[in-house]
Image: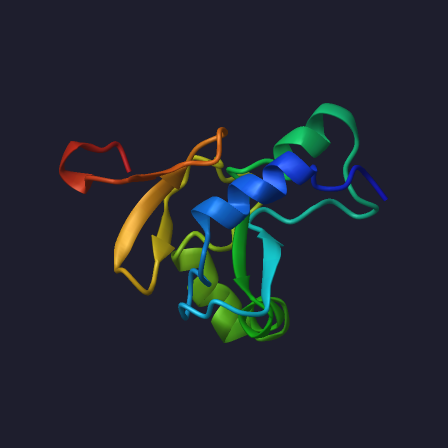
Amino acid sequence: MGEQIKPSIRKQLEARDEWCWHCGEHNDLVIHHRRNRGMGGTKGKQAAITNGCQNLIRVCAQYNFEMESNATVGAAARGWGHKLPMWEDLEHPVFDCTKFVWYVLTTDGRKVEVNFRNSAF
């Protein structure tokens, strides 16, 4: 398998994602790749992108399981930007279902609220 998620990235995620993006749960959070890792993991420059703040969100373990095992939940997750196809840009907004707000995730670990009136999305 490829490179692990760096401790500095984990800290940024813990600060940014204090609750599950889907249900608001504060406990039992796991790191979820919005754009899936390739078979066998990722290496080199691609690993830095795949395991970077734009591609990672923290969600509860139950939602993470359901996104991967239930086609209906997976389809909804794609609509909310919680899951992305391989060709989708990581700047694609992600929806915080607990706050009803869309955000763009940045490479430095921030989330920036999207104003759709002034946005290209």
